[in-house]
Amino acid sequence: MSLDFLDKFVSQTKTDNLKTKDYPKEYSNLKLRVSFGQGALAKIPWVQVVAPDVATSNGYYPVYLFYKEENILILSYGIGENFDEFDSWKPEIHSSKQRIDEFIEKPFRYGNSYISNYYEPIVDGEVVKYLRDGIPLTKESMEEEFNSLIDFYKECMDIDLKDETSTISQGLFYLEQQLEDFIINNWNETQFGKKYDLIYEEGELKSQQYQTDIGRIDILAKDKQNGCYVVIELKRNQTSDDTVGQLARYMGWIQEHLNDSNVKGIIVAGKYDAKLNYARKMIPNTEVFLYQVDFSLNEYRR
Image (cartoon, rainbow, N blue to C red):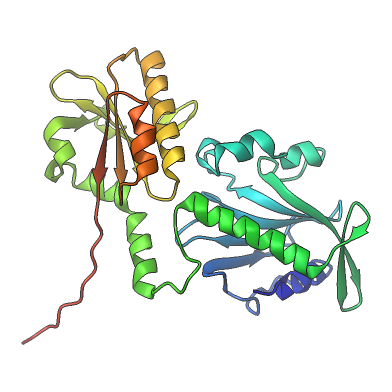
């Protein structure tokens, strides 16, 4: 797909226009969102491409961030400002890529996001040119960089939207995002409810999105028989390696901070794959449960 929208975006950042209705709504079967600010001009307007049901402030996604004062356009491994950094992207991004706040001194916002590429845009009338370290760039090379990041994003989200995806398939993806709430709300009717208890403190549910200093556990429960903790992680939009690594991290935290050497780990996934199988073999006391989302239409007959 073409990056024509990017020229329009950069040109519009030089104006007071906040309107975005004329921009495309999709790119590569993902949602495309544009913002120049709400009510007032933003210091850092952006263009992001996101999977279905991912919020701007609470998710991760490819995003162009235009730092107007520095005149730097950054193609970023974006991380929402309310999103747990530990749960975003793959570990190699955190270890190998430069953060924006390491590239720009005291950025106004989004300093915790990582840099994929950067550009110096030059607006000359209706023509927009892009340089990197003083060297002109072609649109073809920029499209390749953008599409490469999007492909990597889809891999991280563990979704395949490269081919034509039916509306129903995308709808099922929306439903899967509600998996955590569904399990909590129907706890006693699930297999989990027969063996484990949810954790309450003074009548308030603490099990869902249990807060630790290394991130939030999807669901933390306790074994009915021995009182040991059970860490439940949902593999909704991550790779198998990320899910197992995250589970191991939380189990280690429970063992050290809640003094439970018998902590158990459970992964809830839509499908079982070889990577998941090999990864969990290295972590004792773990199980995998599979979920299924079905959609059907039944004719109403009077």
